[in-house]
Length: 221
Image (cartoon, rainbow, N blue to C red; front, side, top):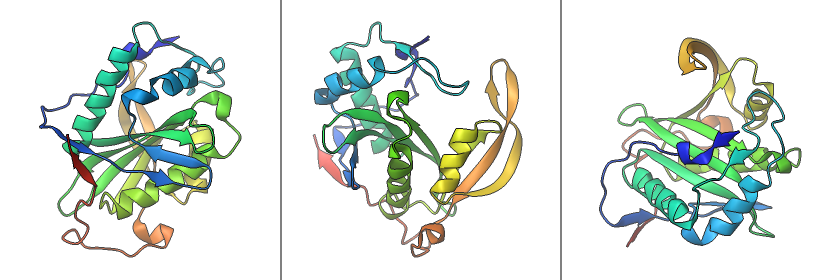
């Protein structure tokens, strides 16, 4: 069983009191930055997980130490990461019940001429096989191009993570290559298959970097 206190501890620079606010709505879902008021919903999502369904599913996790103060600090770190253009992490919520269904993150790899980002996604396993992952990732991709100004968004996936590969394919990402020894996992360097989307893959207009500038809504704290 994983311990969540070991997750989300990304290195973040010190930031001012600026925060970001973005709400993405689909037919059934709302994607937005998590806030301290989401704690009960977030906790219910993680505590309600089923046992591990396959080798790449986290399954049940330990929530020891994950109280409201811990979660508030987590939300603050996410705000800092977004304000620095390091990463944009949103919760996936049910529009009908406000239940926390999972998370999606888009992390900047390089700006300037490349406008290049990495995509990560995860839905709590008790909500699998309802199309939430596909719906959320498709919306996040479009927002990554239209709101965050990226031109290339890729997902690096383990070669035998067939469910993640299937999801990537279903939302329009194209298989590009296999990167050898790309991630260090379980005490070894592991190959990953790379799936990529460009704006044109979603029917969006291609923009040069000068036009594809950051357009994320900001709020003063």
